[in-house]
Structure formats: structure tokens, C-alpha cells
Image (cartoon, rainbow, N blue to C red; front, side, top):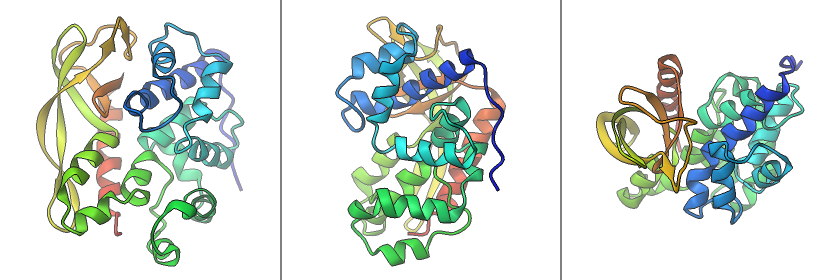
Length: 256
């Protein structure tokens, strides 16, 4: 039986909508997902534009993410698909995804993913275990074809695309006007398994044309999350460790 999450104050609910924009903007600006509205999505992500029905309409145009938000919200008894606990569940693999039964995930995949899966449906479902959860890393590692390409020997660009598309943990070591240098683990393919490798430095964005994704200026030592070539948000050390652990678990349980 579903145990509903407690309702949140309106300001916290609005923060969830902005949080969605912060994680959705990096692939959107590259044209990989969502509407042709990157400028508007960044305005919402930065707080220059307050969350409103326009943001929710944009969010529903992210056809990869939105059905997962539906699934997570329903499993937790939450009406708001942009509740921050639902948003963090999807993007970061946090607690809310644990409420989704495997059967509900399979039903979701059959309805939304099966028509474009491009592989044997029965074989794919047969590899889904109880550890499968409907978060972004699961979608990148298990639904997209990149792991299969790695297994076939097409290491690049598959590895680098996976590394960019997954939400990664990072630590800021240098700050520029619109960029920052972060230390983040590399993704390593050992011939049979994807793993988190040694930390490497990456130059990423946190602001463009005066609009940023952090609310205020970053500083060396900040723990952050990174999606494609953008910092999404500043997080606690505890949340950073949880993201790292969740990402490593997804890699270990990726069997296809």
C-alpha cells in the first residue's frame, strides 16, 4: 500500500519546479531533450523567472523525464509531479524512487519505452531485478543503447556520452566569471563493466549571459552536481556521497 508523502508548503513546491529546470537545462540547451526553449528554461533555473504554469508546461515537454516523474509521484501519493522529493528521486536517485514497485516500472517501460527500445523486450525485462529503480541513471545506463555499444567495442563516443548524460558528483576547485573547474570521477569501461574511476578535473559552466544555476556565486570547496557541461546545484557533502553511491550501484547492477 502506498504511503503518501506529507504535503509541502507552496514555496518548497516552487523550489522543486526550479530544481527540475536546473537539471533539465543542460541537455535542453544542447538540443537533446525537451522543448526548443533553452533561454526560458535557464531563466527559470536561475530564478530570474519565478516558477509558473509556463515552467510546468515546459517540464511536460521533457518526454524522457516526465513519465518517470508521473511514476514516482503516483507511487508516493504525491499529486505534484514537480514536488522536490519527486524531482530529486528522478534526477539523483533519492529515496522517493524506492517506493516504485518493480511491476509498476515494468508497466511504465512497456508503455513508454518498449516501442523504441530496439532490442528483445522479453530479454530486457528478464534482466530487470528488484534493484531497478526509475531514476535518470537507470534510464541512461539501462534504457539507452550506450552500454550495449560499449560491449560491442564502440568505446567512444559511448563512454563520454554516458559520462556527460549521467548526473555526476563534483567539487569546485576554481571559479571564473561563467565557468568553474570541478573535480569529478571519470567513467571507466574495463571491458565488461562501467565503473567510477579516478577523479579528474573538468571545466564546466555555472552561468551564461548573467543567468546562473546556483542562486549565488560558487566558491572553491563547494560540493555540486554536474550534468553535461553545467553545474546544476550546490549540495551537502552527505547528498554528494549519496549520489556517488547511487551512481556506483547503478553501474554494478547494469547487466545488459
